[in-house]
Image (tube, rainbow, N blue to C red):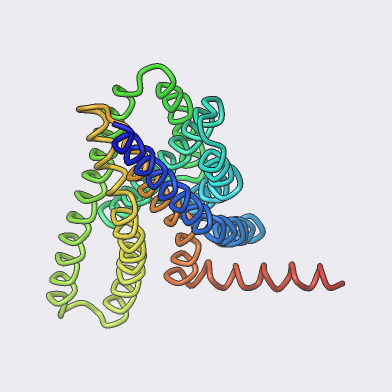
Amino acid sequence: MENSTNFSNHGSESQNSHIKVFVVVNCALNAPLMLVSILGNALVLAAIIRNPSIRSPSMIMLGSLAATDLLVGLIAQPLFIADELIMKNHVLNAVSAMIGFALCGISLATITAISMDRFIALQYHLRYVTLVTNSRVIYSIVAAWLIIVIYSGLWLWYKVVFHLLSAILTGVSLAISTLCYIKIYQIVRRHRLQIRSQEQATRSHIIQNRTGKMRLKQSALNTFVFYIFMIVFYFPAYIFHFLFGISYSTWKTEWTISTTVVFMNSSLNPILFCWRIRQLRVAAVKTARDMLCTTTD
């Protein structure tokens, strides 16, 4: 009996030791991600604010996404790290979870809105300027932020319902984005066939038409890259939302890993923005130079 008790205590100590090592490694991974997220998204947000010439509806959406990712680095990740290090603090755990769910939900909704925006730009390119305006985009973003922040409070009262609804809403967002890009592919393919068939039109008209549609296609391709990375980073969290919703279980380690993977997306987004969008890249470089010169002076 004594040997059995010693063996049990040894196994418990070994398990606790593994958990502590995992917590330290996970926090060490989140620390540089947090720094990259803060610096990268702050630069992108500053570039959009300081350069009114690039402030289009789609750029405002990217600004909202950068603001969300910036808050992930400033608030969600520090709380997540503190919650990992200071275990069994229910208040800290609740605050960390609610803020994390809210910000990640807003990021997901914004990416979905960006994919819908690119579909509308291609499908209704002649009416796009009147359909999608800066003011409408801003109102929609504010409404989405308020709704998702209020919705995240459901986690405090009905965790199972919250996770199940989150899984459903995440699935709907991914389905909408996927449908938008399928439609975008069909539109681009149809445009390509139309351009080939316009042999009797004037050459200047063909070149002008082709240039405008190529610009829209490039913009759609850029957002498609953001969408692919979003799926890669959000899919593990989606799976665990669904599993928690149908049979609530506390897979602490698995959920912690999926949360860290989602946070990686916030760190990578500003790099993707500047890589894929030349206009934003130029503005970001100019903003960084201006800030460095101001600091030096």
